[in-house]
Amino acid sequence: MIKQITFIGLGVMGEAMCGNLARRGDWPVFAYDLKSEPLERLAAEGVPSATSMDEAAASDFVITCLPGGDHVRSLVLDGRLLDKIKPGSVLVDMSTSQPALMREIAEAARAKNIDFADAPIARTRQAAADGTLAIMVGASDATFARIQPVMETIGSDVMHCGEVGTGQIVKIMNNMVLFQTVAALNEAVEMAEGAGMDGAALFEMLTKGSADSFALRNHGMKSSAPRIYPSPAFSVDYAAKDLRYALELADETGVDAAGARNVARLFEAAQAAGDGDKYWPVIRETLKKED
Image (cartoon, rainbow, N blue to C red):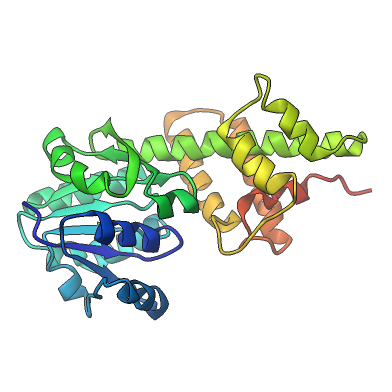
């Protein structure tokens, strides 16, 4: 039985996820963030705010959704959130973080009789609003069964990937493949337009062939072809962070991830051009050779 949920981290995705939990679930939901604006918007929808970290940790089901592994470590371990959560509770981290960090937190949680799962998310900001996210869960069988009803109010595809850490592995590999696919699409549209063909028309034709993909229909057709790179969105800075985790995993496993390293170079070029806060398909703008 879940008595109360606290959702910590109300960024681009987290605010919508917290709202869906409150609207669709059968549990009282509290929101917590350092910024007042998302708390005020959620309060207008009837979602109360936790007034302190101690109050946030008082729920028996705590969710964190933070920018990355450094933030997770700072809050959960160094900031002693784990020490504040009651024994018998569950902690779910929905950030994108390093698999090794998830296992470290799981070990610390186990010593305090707290269930822990990593459950990073995939798909778009609109999917967060619609409650149709893909959620990759790393957890024991028992913990997955405990959290599954909650996760299903946020996402339409809740996958049990294996033990703690495997959710992050799936998420990191998903993003690595996506980044490389969009990089290839950017190269294709840049070359096609340079050769005199309309880029949007190229992508429409590609949907009929073997190059069709989610990346083509979303990132390619909606962002790269029309050159629309909004902010705030999933930015170059965030994408570069996720890709760094993938490259760390490549080093740990002895894989020469040449394609991923090429995308890392494009991310670095976009950041150097001042585009770090823009939607990450902006890496198209780094492809032209200098004369």
